[in-house]
Image (cartoon, rainbow, N blue to C red; front, top):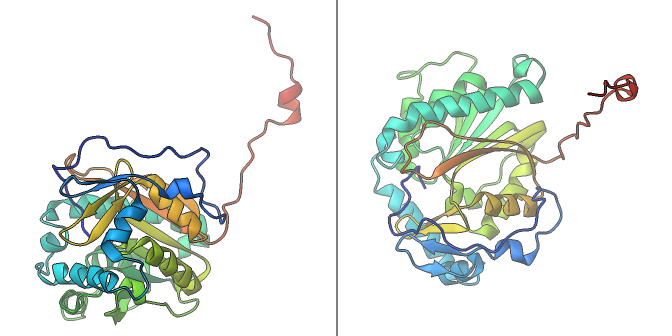
Length: 313
């Protein structure tokens, strides 16, 4: 999955069953209506619900051959893509700077809020999921983390990342390095317990079925250190979802994502829109997700202020 234009076959608006506010990420089970959002595929075909679409695409899940085919065809698509920034960004290599700048601002805020001294006195470790050729690791993560592990199912991309991040071609510092290169699909990966401060997931989660999305996050939670968190950055559909038949991925709406976060037992700590992208592209959002509920801040006036007489005008 990559940053991409909205398919021309997709109408400007398509139906979605309304969700009842407030829509918060909690650990309670999602109601059936919240996963009944209608959507379309890249040819403009409409589906009444995500369940209808998934039944058609992957069958009953589990060991269904259709599910294996879904993942096999997704990897096959990327194996045919050039191992370059332009290639992994779907021909929109010019958005790399805006993407990295937006991500860095978001990450900086989170590091200052979550770790004392922005983590400068800690040995920070990150996991770059769907790392591709190492674009995000090289341009962002390796500057903030002492170690970065890369996870990518396309071996050709991972080889390019290993070469690009080798000491012969790139040196961040002796204290900052790419450590492990895992050629494993996201749906099959389980991190080492307590290894990561941040697990970064960008433009790859759309390849996972809803079932595997939830399963991945439940497994990956074990890989976080105390105070650690996930950052998910993804394309956002206006409503429901858009199925891309070419690369076997799904672009979900904001509400669709929040429903899956809730089912994964995750809490939405902070979110932000990516700015500076061309209008013809899908909107992109960044989500910071934690395993613990954010602390509520109650803003109240002091008793002195509350009881102070006001001037009658």
